[in-house]
Picture (spheres, rainbow, N blue to C red):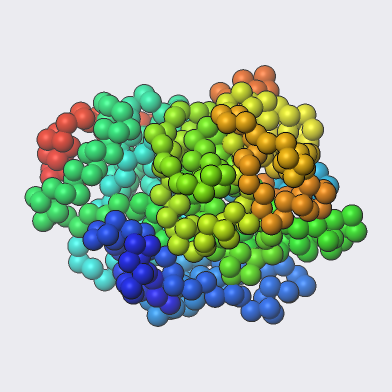
Length: 470
Ligand SMILES: *Cc1c(COP(=O)(O)O)cnc(C)c1O
């Protein structure tokens, strides 16, 4: 399998090079496989639905062929996924895909844990340690730190803005030990990002250390996210066969999105044969992609802060990947776009809890709202010519190929829940009047000692620290 560059389609590199380089320094483009092989029918039509790990192995095989032997791949998958990725029914035609069963309680664990093991494998015969630097505004840092914990030959330095992330997030970051450490920077997230960027261009640091970014755009984080789309859609398809009311429905997956890596992974799964008929690209007020579907013009913006803060991205980098695997026309046929403001997010946490008894986090609440409104009538209204006004939240004015079926109530939905509600306890409390139950693995970090290292926001202090301590 070859990989190419979204900005230079003549490029051919293998998986190893794509993972190690992360992105193209020359063009600034992102790496993407040149093909998305469809899984064999014998796999897709198995009467008993494959497990998550079986699905992962089957899907990862073609992308890693020639760079990771199958026996090693199997070990990587077993080691990366000691947890399940369950699908639960919410109502007769809605399922929730719970992506928060990993160690840090957010969906980023799925991608980061695979990436960490793949990088560990690629780096194992190198004599120099790989030093990863990440700036984080919350979820990414803890997922990356946790994923690389105890991976030999690699260490991770996380920079976070002191006092500007949630209490639980700060606890998750500041209590790492061993090969992972966190610097609590006296500054903003942008300061953290700037320090990391400067480090990568600093010739002393580059000369002395082998630095890497383990960035969210790394292809080894994107591919594993396709596993759960495949597995969950096969599972839902299988269950639909037992329900005559819904056995002929289309399957629509709603993805609460920020940088659009998750949705891109969904598109990869579809290309590989997942029984998914369409997607809903659901965002908060940072609605760049929904507006792109509506107008056909891609206009990135500055991000604004919202309650679903892991999706506060105004200029989503994976737009470039989406546009490289599909034409705009194909994307518009495949996806509906929907956006939700903060008041509606709170209302939706309450609404879902009231209707189904299920507690969502603010990100999952965005997906519930989009799906529930679309099936309840938003799509039908749009088909009848009732359009969203400019600036108004909700379904954007673009009808996908599956729109008519959705308008007629002939769709079954899978909504993605990307974080455990306890990670956003304050917001959930505001919506429901009580705190969500904290899972043990989150509760545990609250009692661990703070090991974070205080850091000033000027580059000299940071560089000095790296020189002395790495
Ligand atoms: C990162 C994140 C998202 C957004 O995912 P993208 O791949 O950036 O679109 C959604 N929800 C949670 C909880 C996240 O951490």
